[in-house]
Amino acid sequence: MAAAAVSSWVPEHHFKTRLGIVNPVNQHTATPPAVTLTPPTEGTIVEEHDPHHLPTFGSTTLTAPTTPILYLPPLLSSLPPGYVQTSEHTSNYRPLTTDTRLPDIDPVSLMLHKALHRFQPITTEYSVIPYEDAFNWEELLLPEDAEREWYCVVFRSKRKEGSDGGPLYEADRQAHEEAVQNGGLILYWYGIPHPETGLNLATCIWQSRTHAIAANSKPHHIRAMRLAAASYERYDLARYRLRKVRGESHLRVEPYDSGDVGW
Image 1 (cartoon, rainbow, N blue to C red):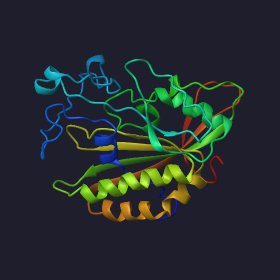
Image 2 (cartoon, rainbow, N blue to C red):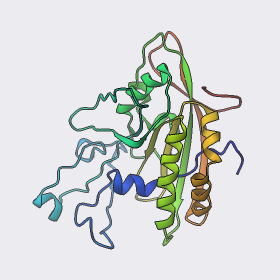
Image 3 (cartoon, one colour):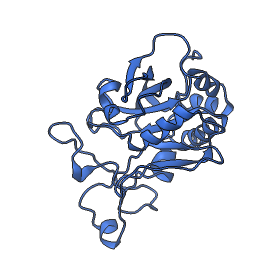
Image 4 (spheres, rainbow, N blue to C red):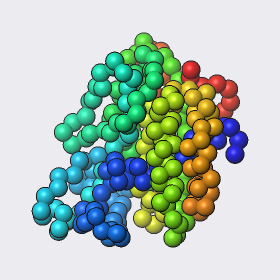
C-alpha cells in the first residue's frame, strides 16, 4: 500500500464494545443476538433512532427492548496535558474521548476539536453518498478570523461473512491508541453496516497529511493492515481536504488532489 493510503485501520471492536454500540439483550452472552437497523423512509435519521442518544439501561430496557440501542458518537482524541477537555454536547449527545492524550495541538485545531463535539451523520445512507453530503459540516462553525486546513481519510468497507474479527479488533484498538499517542489524530468516527448492502463508512480527521503518513508506518498499524486483508470483502480509501477560510465561519470539504495538507 502506498504511503498516501493512510490510516486504513478501523477499530470496530474498540468502538462497538468499549465505546458504545450495545446489544441490549445480554452483553455477556458468547453470541449476542443480531441488531437490525431499518432506515427511515426518507433516508434520514429520525429522533427515535438518534444514534447519538446515550442509552439508559434498566431491567425493562435490557430484557424487553422496544428498539435497538445504538450509540454512535464521534470519538475525539483527548487533548494534551494542561488543556481543559471542553464539551458542547447536550444531555442526549455525548461525544467520547480516548484514554491516550494527544502530545500537542495548535489553536485552530483546538477550535475544530471543540466544534467536532457535534459531528454526526445527517442520513443513514452515509456509506454510499458523497462524503461532503453525509455529515453535518454546515453546523460545525469556527471563528471567522480562523484559517487552516486538515486532512481527512475515508474508509468504505464490507466485512467478509464469517471472518474472525478477534485478532483484528485488538490490533485496531492498539493502532488507534498508537495514532493518538504519536500525534495529529483529532477525530475518528465509525458507522453501522448498511442493512441491505453491508457497506460501512469510517473516517479520521488529522491535523496534517504528514501526521497521517507517519501513523501508516507504525507497528500496530502495520499489523492491523495485514489482518484486515483477510477480513474485508471490500475496502476503499478516499482522501479529502477540510478547509477553514478566513472570513467564513463554515468548513469546506474538498477532494484531496496533491501536496501537503495542514501542519
